[in-house]
Length: 108
Length: 112
Image 1 (cartoon, rainbow over the protein chains, first blue to last red):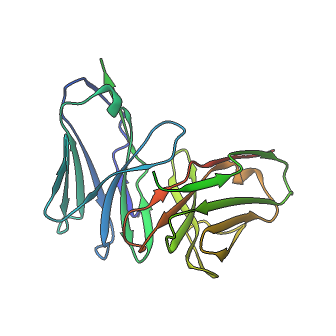
Image 2: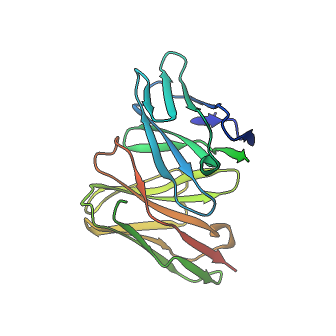
């Protein structure tokens, strides 16, 4: 079983739409959680850390459910510049485990 | 942006030749990581370091070795490159091993 699983998409949404990505992780000992975005042929960049109480950064909201081992990312009022691949990342014991990513295209 | 550089950025080499990739950081972070990224697999850990001269294997370490003689440098060596090692290689750093990682720009390696 993979450490981290994500729906690969692709998600194609119009500008202004709200879109949600989900991710599950297999090991309950996982310690910390993150969402990264990766543009084509570029390095992953940190979008936000995910905290147990949930957290928000502008149009982005992340949620963590430890009981269900589930992480989510909500993007409101999508912009063309949000088009990218979104990676769910889980940390355990100094190592980081990556989902294969969810592709998002925001359409004008 | 975190101060991480990788060299070379692109390399084409032939099967059987040795290859060394370099990662250099200016953040004084303790942890450094090497990943490879391939379609359908996402990022997979090759090796990581938790201090000078302290390294450990990751998920896909066969065929790779690493060295860290200084805090700022982490080298990845392919002793005898194979076509299956054609990939994009990313270096990453983390200050405490459970905090967020920051990535270098990547190295595109092609083994013919």
